[in-house]
Image (cartoon, rainbow, N blue to C red; front, side, top):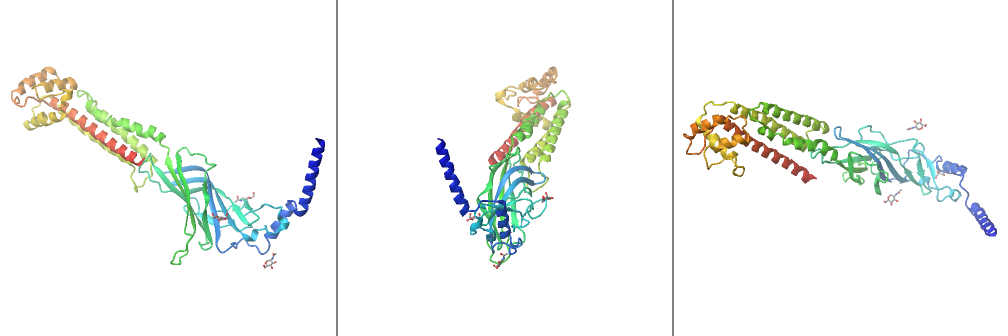
Length: 435
Ligand SMILES: *[C@@H]1O[C@H](CO)[C@@H](O)[C@H](O)[C@H]1NC(C)=O
Ligand SMILES: *[C@@H]1O[C@H](CO)[C@@H](O)[C@H](O)[C@H]1NC(C)=O
Ligand SMILES: *[C@@H]1O[C@H](CO)[C@@H](O)[C@H](O)[C@H]1NC(C)=O
């Protein structure tokens, strides 16, 4: 056992001694000498390494800090990785330095491609970090990964809020050097999300990279190479469903209910105005969350505005019903009597519910009284039944202001319910088609 260890260690000592003779060990001095040799008087950080420098670029996305719909800006923390080859800094042919696998330097001494974010909203400065170290391989390949928080403008489309998807770009382009001098290449794995931390509000649907302007245009104009990173983000909508969509949809059914209120009481207009106010509150809330542009209209605000209008219209309609009801025994114009007795009744009549009928005269009044007209004086209406049945006997009904009000209430209830359901349905279809 002891013998075996001794033989093995002897073998390694001899091997390392021989190897060390052929190839010098790495030492800080060796690396320092290599740096001195590479960065000699012939090297200038102002001169690009070759006629056209190919810069392989990729973006590592750490977080999406925010997508501000109101300001239309996207903020991303990321690391921009650039790789290019500078043959002046290659030392693989120098066997003296083969022990040095990498050297490091900063942009103070080394040429770096001057690039900037074209759609930045912070500043328009060339990406630069004098303290950010770059790694240089023996074949002259330089890897430089300056990290930053990129805040760019992003045109947001909130048409389908809160089921919207936004597309934003970060565009990098060269400063000074045209596409004849520097060209971007998108790496195979141009967007790296292995370290990505999820954003609470936005879900990443896809990330991609594309290059532009690498080919000179036929007219001979100067073009600038660009690399564009696209972010497709989808809003996480649970919050908005719970806080906006759900209450708004539930509240919508309060609008027609105004016509189910007791006619005798004066609550009708109060109630209608309260519903109207709650709608304006929600309209304000939604308006706060969408940009104040008129490029595209948000369907959600459109829906709320329509509901606000419907709710507003219900106020005078409710007043009309109360007004008609309170006319009491005032004489009715024959035309109104006819309209109310035939047209209104026909609209309001629903045979299934047996709320009114054509078969027997006088039933309408009594039935309606039972259904909704708590304020109707029964003895009064039966007197009127008797009085009016003589003139309208051929049509089989008699009508009073109060019965007209009850009929109106019923018709308006059905009308508003229908309008509200129809608009809500259309709104959902629009959202569902996009979703
Ligand atoms: C600079 O380049 C010239 C021409 O290639 C060469 O003769 C000279 O030795 C170089 N200087 C250094 C310090 O390497
Ligand atoms: C850049 O990418 C091209 C093609 O993907 C590859 O051939 C080249 O070696 C890369 N250059 C560097 C410096 O990584
Ligand atoms: C680089 O480091 C020096 C010394 O730590 C510091 O004074 C300087 O501000 C740094 N530069 C940048 C761009 O951060």
